[in-house]
Length: 485
Ligand code: ADP
Image 1 (cartoon, rainbow, N blue to C red):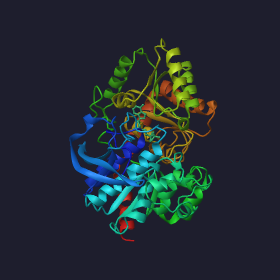
Image 2: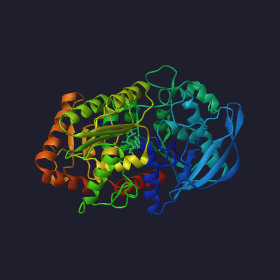
Image 3: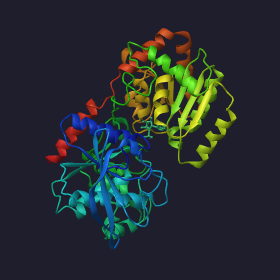
Image 4: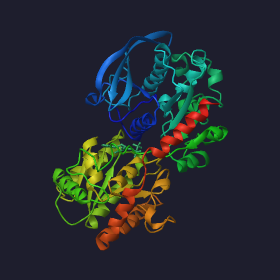
């Protein structure tokens, strides 16, 4: 795996969960997996065991010169991880955050190049290199164009977790990576962006050059290929359709599992729900909310336009109006949206029925998934959507907009054509306030008036299987397919 994230050591969102969870599942199936990551200054060092320098002098070709790197090795909850640390003046990864810097494209272009140089020099020859998102879109390009003579057998699977960020940049990356030949690479059939003249699109490079491209749910694969979900990459996916498909992400039930979760005050299961009510009490206590007979609605996720923040805002006030409580945990890179929710937090500071926590807090996230009754996910688009899958495992009912992967995973209690026992949440379609209101209204109605039925819905949600078992097998099949081509 070559990736910019791996949970929990370096995680900004679902990508980190997937890199960790899929690697673990592949290992359980007997495959040897190693993960190559940048060595971020701000990574959670407490999640790495036995961090030592594994390779002292890696010299990575960059522009007309070479950059000295060290490669560190450590175990991240059992996974073998290699962290690349460049010693250059730019300090590419000597930063607190994973993303959000003006030179992000250069940082991850360098990382892609360094990862391949490391595999080459350290004599690592994996059957398959699995890389992820725009940050590592150049990996298959560089492998094929520059390392093909030393790694002719290696195949690349490329997974797109979010089409919104494609790594659009100028032709300078062709010079920094020493690919050169701008006229060749800027061709629309290669890395040339379809919309922007003479722009390099790193994600497009990943699609064109990889042996197989996936995105993180079958429904989103359709949206990307035929709708506007591909953010301009639809035609490229069409050209490469024989090597493109959707594989639903799994959830790592070793981490997200109320039966063993160390962050909860008590464990619980679908059969033994008492611990969930204990978690609800603890959540209220921790967030200074009053103990009252009402459902808790939660939002956990990035504060980003993608996530339908205007509907989250509305859900908060609607929940309060209907006598429910509301909890939000999120942070984001968008100043305006962050500011808006900070302002709301201030405004609602004395309200005992809600709490907004602006920041990233893994432990609190676990307690919220367990302690809440409902989770709202009104995303504008959502390639997979891990938060509703996690919520369901904790018996928290997802109330989601029917887009992307959530169409494959959340089935409306009242309107789905699935059998009753498979229905596990509430869905709505539009992105206006009335839409989320009507779905929440139905959820509140059931919670207040038919608690037995609500409990049945919780059982259905907890029994839905979104583990890595099936997607793990799907990826093994893809690897086998590309290995034998
Ligand atoms: P995305 O990948 O678009 O961010 P997903 O729903 O697929 O969205 O995955 C989000 C993951 O990040 C989940 O594991 C969620 O619990 C976690 N997460 C997001 N924001 C926070 C936060 N502020 N604190 C703790 N965990 C968070």
